[in-house]
Structure formats: structure tokens, C-alpha cells
Image 1 (cartoon, rainbow, N blue to C red):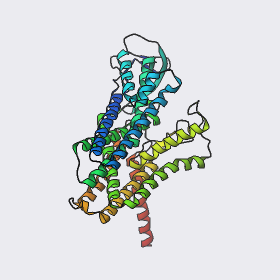
Image 2: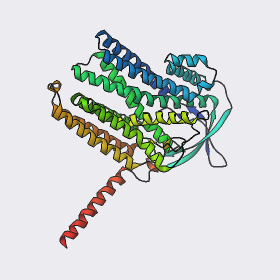
Image 3: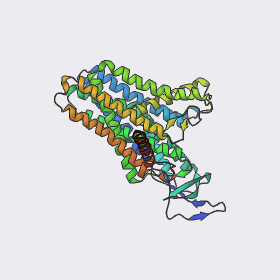
Image 4: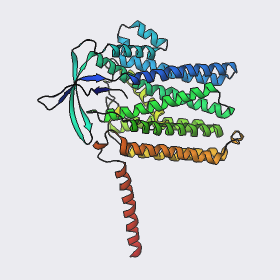
Length: 432
């Protein structure tokens, strides 16, 4: 992920307070370009697929494809407008582009213009950023001057990170589930539908990757962190396996037991939606009224409801990496809760196994052309593989692993020791 970085040829000075002064530069806005390309590609691919459904007179599939395409697009426009606070500013052209669903495109152009104009002339800094950079097991404190252009570019990056998550889990994941379901029923995958499913999977994987990066940045706000190439690849494999197997399991279950689809899907969404509110009511806290100064109490509740809906949609398909805390102004729980992580993957593994077995016993004749036992094993092994890569990331590749008070090996050792001591105690009682 691109971010402000240190130029190795920049002079470093240590001030009286022990901070190392570093001249700030920035990478090209690759994350903004990636989000924009994924957004535009998915819109174009979905339009082509919808046109194909219209030509074959499949009105239901055409309508659902258009709905999933428009819902994610509208939510992306609203997110960008909210983060940039354009409603209170005189920018009619930008608002027009958002109404035409072209907001990400014009925002990307704006970010590229800001980046290209940076460094042409010296500008006064508006703030000073102090971060710690990890070098192995040691941390060095650095001080950076942040100018107007760098702050504007950082705002664009933060906005596109949020929109990547919104697009992934409110549009791409439902679209991927729908197109895979249609392909299973028709026993056919046309090229345009295959392209759309590939774009949706790429968008969802990228959104999950952004969630991991945001979780690290929120948890370790005082540190300047960046992902290594092995860590990046490990997260991509972890998230791709997790999302692909989860979507496939849901589609197979839906194809065999259509009457239970609503119960399973709505049960997951409602449970994940209500859980943060239950924790909020049990804490006895009040609603954070300073999310946005112009919001009324009703507006705050609407925003919190939308965030909770997004949170539940994410956790229905993969681990959200960040935990929702409605009592906090930032809405994020900064604690690293290993218990919730373990509980989530344990429940999802058991649920995937149960849904897959139900499909195996109640599958219809449409699956006679595939080896069903092999597919069951592949799905379970695929999800177990995602858990394996997740453990590898947290144990060896996490950029702030040196700051962990406990890691995966400690957790597994603790569980093993408890079982061994319990078994040893039972053996002693038997001997006595």
C-alpha cells in the first residue's frame, strides 16, 4: 500500500527532543489507481453481463445484476462525498460527476494532479507528523513536515481505502455470489460472466487486504508501518481462499436447499448486525454525537446503522480484521482480540462444513457431472488453507510482530499445555 515514505538520500537531523527529522516524500498513488480501475472494470463488466441477460430475456438475473451494480456505485459516491465533505462546499462540477456515478474517476484525476504538482515549488508545512519506525526489534522516532499537497493526497488515499471496502462487500461479493449461482444452474460460464466474476473476486480480495492494512494502522497509530512483499502475498492468498471457498459453499447450499437460504443468510446478517449493538447497550455508553458536527441524533443513528450493516456484510464472508465499537468516536476497537479471531474462524469452519455436507446429501441432478466427494474435500481444505496462511501472517510476517505481547505460537502452546496438564492430572487420579 502506498504511503508517505523516507527518501534514503534525504538528510536526517536529530533535534533536542530526540526526534529524527526526515524530509517527506510520497509514493505514486497506486492504491487510488487500483481502486478506480477495479470500480470501472466491474461496472463495465456488469453492464455487459446485464445486456446479455436482456438479450436472452432473463429478466430476474438482469435486474439483480443491475441492482448489485448500482447499490455499490451509489454507496461509493456517498462515501467519497461524505469523507471530502463536498455538500458544504461550492463544487457543483464534482457533485454532478457523483450524480453521474463518475465520482471515483474525477477523484482519481484530482489525486494524480496533486501528486504531479508536488515538489515543483516549496510550500509551507501545515503540521508535523511524529511516528516511530521499526527497524528489526528496535524503534526509531522520526519527525516529518506535512504540507498542503501531502495532506490533500493523504485525504484522497484514505477516502479510496474506505470506498474499496464499501465496493467490495456491498457490491462485489453479492455480485460474485449471484453470477456463480447462475453459472451453477446453467452449467455454463460465458466469457463475459467469467470476467465479471474474476473482477468481483479481485475487488473483494483487495477490499479485505485494505481492511488488514487499516487494522494495522489503527492499532499501531504511533508507528510508521509498511507491508513487505511476502506479507502482501500471504494476505492475498489468505483472503482469496477464504472468500472464494465461503462464496462457493453458500452458492452450493443455495442450489440444493433453496427454502433455507433466507434463514441462513438473514440469520448471519442479523446476528452480526445486532452483536455490536448488544455490546454497546451492555456497556451503558451513549451514542458518540461528535462523528460529524452537522449531524443530528437521527443522522448519527443512520450513519451508525450503515456502518454496522457494512460490518455485518464483511463478517458474513470473511474476517473483518477491525472490530466495531459504537461507544467510541472512531467506532473502532483498537485492541487485538485473539479470542474473537479464534471464535470467528472456528464457527465459520464448522458452518462451512455443515452447509457443504447438507449440500452433499440434498444435491440435485445438476451436479452429476462433477465428483461431489472431491469437491467437499477441496472446499474444506481450501478454507483450512486460508486459516493456515492467516496464522503464518500473524506469526512471521506481521509488520509489528515485535510489539505483540502474545503471538500465535504462544496461543497454541498455551492450549497444548492446558490439555497436557489436564490429561496428566487425570492419569494421576486413575493411578491413585
